[in-house]
Length: 193
Image (cartoon, rainbow, N blue to C red; front, side, top):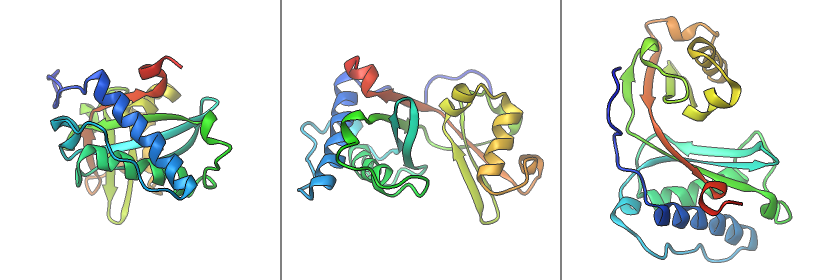
């Protein structure tokens, strides 16, 4: 892949803050058993169907992450649902408790549309990858390669392991690689906390 302009325009600072607020309030109301919050201002960008992931962190460590690679609902609705799922439905972690919420940082990744790609097209840190082979699938967000300082081959090998495939499965013609970019933002970015 050659250098290309972003596939979509970045969200404004206000839109990012709105989504982060919505994610936190959605988790809070789920913990309290209350009515899900409403988005205060639904801009065209927030109303546009978009794929997204919501990641929760505590003390710099992952505490939950759930996402969707298909744009099936408006971005604001996707973020609200995914935030609750990241808090309570990630099978790697116990459900989030009310006591944990204040120490939980929220990060949102808004994904570009998936495009077919080859291993050599991947730039670690820029591209996320959705890998499929038969009934096996796995996805890594672009920031995973940065966090672990992985090169392309390590990134793909680890993704194969995540998909419960042999580490070299990405080299086989039956394996499909779908690439995407992500606009990633967190409460720390938005509020300086």
